[in-house]
Image (cartoon, rainbow, N blue to C red):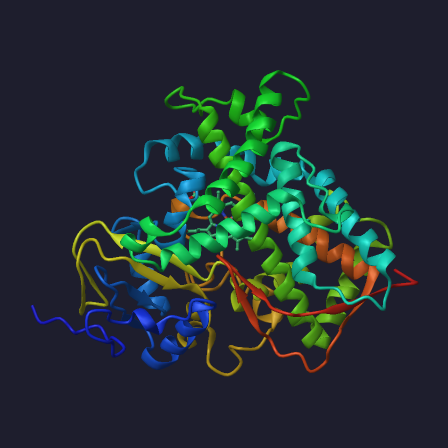
Length: 458
Ligand code: HEM
């Protein structure tokens, strides 16, 4: 059959497109390539030829779990040195994934997450206290404080471990090690295998050992039987897969706990930072959030019963994740040779990247007038429910979708409602233009705000 060639940017002999991707912020190169090539293109690196998809129509094909499955490659593959076959980095079909998934899904259900409300509120109160104490003159980097919030929250809720980021000037050694490890994982992903074998790995090994030690200590103490909290770590130690009767061994439990810390802190923190950035640029939306919070909370601290009564905040979170999905790309690969859109040949073994951020701007789904605008109204009054299937996909796809969705949703709702109830937020530098920082996820870079305590909260 006659297939249509997939467009490819011009490359150099032997190295192909290696020099095309900016190591600091590959996301920006992908943006340029999307603008240049549109729905689909491929890149050429020594030994591989990834295909990148940007449109919703082609995405629907590669998200079909009968034809394609998750591909663990690049930085994510490097992370397997730390988190092995934990949920996030498990290859398709790895046996521990199924067992761990069945044991853990009930623990992440909305009902179980409600049980974590007080712990989440506890950490959020520490953030509020910090902003109050520093006062209105202080320049706050929201991305940094939201990272503290998210990290401390995941750590407390999943394994009862208080990182106490808000009580220390310097970040906890665990957080430093994890940040360094994530960055190095991304760097290693760009190196040829031969070079990787030659570079020094002593810092990388040290970071891994220190993270493992902290988590292993928590597991050991729990196994001694003391301080049971009925949290995720207890569930993993005591739980059995209902189908096979298997349970998770200590190493796998460590992989899962480290996975939750990695997957659960940068993402939620990026989401909150982008939302604050957009709300400060969009006065009508800012005013509506404030009005909703004041009407529903009536000046009292948020409680679990308020969570379902904040539809505008829900729309703000959906729209924030549409414009700025913190995990901007999903990796997939076909089970066998495939043809996309009836014309592009995709051989078995091809790594495909779905660029969620650009799919979230597909004019056939979102129109072309205001697709770059932050407009929570497009997610309100049944419009979100009426979207085509999988058009909004910040939490991934099918069986490998995010297990922590309800967790981050609740955590972010508590944070937004509480911050808008307690503070007037203003941009520190009104001429700030969005700059991006990319580790494994995306965040606004060098973005500062002031938080002025509100006198009258009702
Ligand atoms: C998977 C996004 C918060 C734990 C994923 C995936 C995405 C995602 C896109 C799929 C990745 C892929 O296909 O390769 C997000 C976003 C979050 C968030 C945008 C917040 C706004 C969390 C939290 C946790 C978490 C709070 C844990 C406490 C996980 C895990 C997986 C995952 C374990 C792997 C699931 C599996 O393959 O079985 N997340 N995530 N995430 N996420 Fe999240």
